[in-house]
Image (cartoon, rainbow, N blue to C red):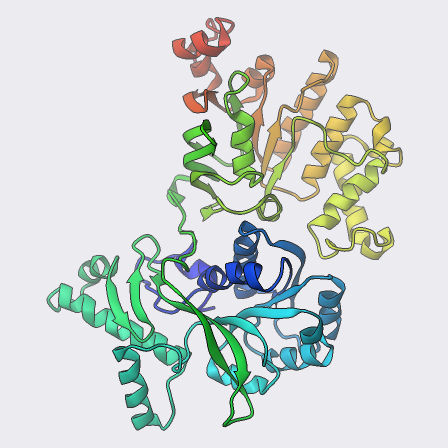
Length: 529
């Protein structure tokens, strides 16, 4: 879809430049406003396609970064006409604000049913507003909605828009619409680029002329961001009000957001041809004057075990918290499968495929082992906001939970309270809870901490089996050097928040700086492979 972030993100083609706004720009313009003015708790409703999923992700990212809370995230088949059960889920969520990101068939039906079922009376409704034809189809059902308008001919005040409106009315008898504005901006951009190339229309000349180009279009000033070819541009926060001359709603301007305010994160794959699943670029975390992680850059290949070692206070756990979204970085980037996830919170990175354990075991002690894993399965599925419902309602999660328990060797203990497991068994259960989401990357923070020495080999063997069977990538923070040296493909050594060294186990063991700072000569005689 034209508005999907992936066009100028993970699927970027160097020959493509986009003058239309993306769903990421919608979210940047509207998310902060929604938290500050509409409410603090949110429910999301979007079509279950690329457009809908990326729109919902973008709005959640922005809203949660400004202190908003997600209570429900509903993805609905794009051909839906009867929204009544979905709307009931919206109302049951208890959210103060509904963010809708609908497009295409059913747009008018959705708003009509939202009003019929009392949504506008019980909560605020926001989101992206479609083109003029879509708004006309809503009639007066959209009155009172506060949302994002990419373009309406009545909003901008500049010579380019005045000219476009005048000529469009002369030629077609009506004012221009969203797509006309985008096309006009594209034409202006091409003309300006051709001026820079002295008329040379070859791609090799036009692409660098367009990258970074700033030009005046119907919305004001546009700039093509060189990294992803997305045109940064003004966006409009509006309230839909009744048009006195017609039976439909028109946008009334609340706030014009600048191009800088609405610039989404760059999502172009970094070094995408190098085969890395997870990367950081100059990642940094400051707590006041304390720099816990100092400009750390690493690259992790898929299907490997990559260990992070270092003395206490080296920044290892803080680094894991930045990777998983448990902490927000002061600066730098985290890239997962080519996507910038630096600002995503913990539950969003979990949905994307990053599983995280902690130094202190995190389980529900009074629930059974099976219930712990079943809830983890359900938390990332369609029943994620109905955790107190009957376990029979979502039987597929029970089946998945049994599969996970067999995988981690806890099938026999499935029906016993989790608190009765020995410490090693609780560590296995925590691994099972992570595996319930079927993550691509497992971040394991000191998995052997507190375990009896005789229990360690069994857990390490299990981690290796899980990694190989599912082709998982494992990142491991561990103080047991025998474990690290025996199972790691790569090791990164951290010291005082910085990377001290990186290499294979044999290379790390032979590194004199590492020996001096951390290993203390224990592995100096290990042969380099």
